[in-house]
Picture (cartoon, rainbow, N blue to C red):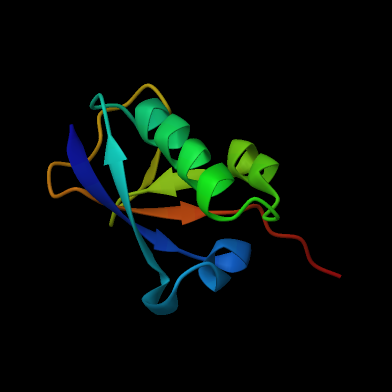
Length: 86
């Protein structure tokens, strides 16, 4: 188990002060983080639209990460919800 620091953007940024969520992850892939974060969101913020996470991307400091890729060695990622404009 390792702790990943998730920088929050968009709708996620309103969840915690400082816009960083600590997530305990079993496994070393982005998909493991997505699963752990889903559980944490449902437990801590039941009124939050947790389905948004399924459509959001994770990124390290350089690029967007696919679910099958390993988590960054420094344990820091950002979650990027989809955006829309008018």
